[in-house]
Length: 226
Image (cartoon, rainbow, N blue to C red; front, top):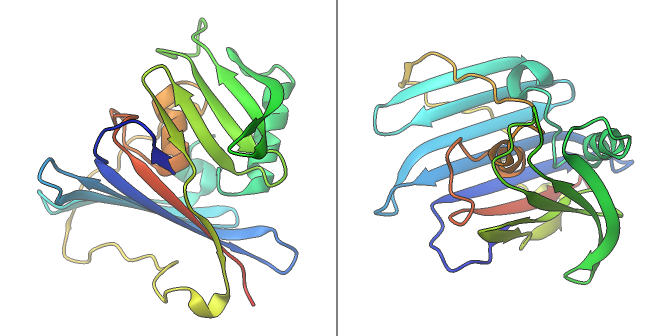
């Protein structure tokens, strides 16, 4: 995904998803590299989700410190869905459609970049801690995220590839935190997945709190075995 507003990207993200023979997602690897004003990396965040378990680290290159979380998916990323897993997204959208999420609702389907999408709109409401409204677009066939609209910018899916297993880099799903970094206290879990627009962005590209929605780019690479 990439912003369509004219600002330089201040982070890059890459996501690998592996499916089984039936097409169900069995594991994902998500990596976010934050960049400083000079374009050099300042931090690396990586999350590996395999079935019901997850591992996460946040490595600060400037301080050479790292925080690590591991355990169940809920313990590591909270109650947010894995937006690179269609089944997880479908379950989340079902919850929204039932009216169970305050300030968040499903709008009529529409076309985005020639693709039929499910439209989810979130607006500030008592208790949901939203600072402004946003709209998210999910592929109606595959349930992957295709875009986000905010009052001050837009984000769109720009790369979505299917590769054979033989073409996958050997380190695509490796859990590889820097061994020499000093271990710091784990970062706190984010609030509810529907609590804030930045948490929603974090679900998609694992952006840190405070990230600028106009200064990010995210690529999603979809992998299936031979």
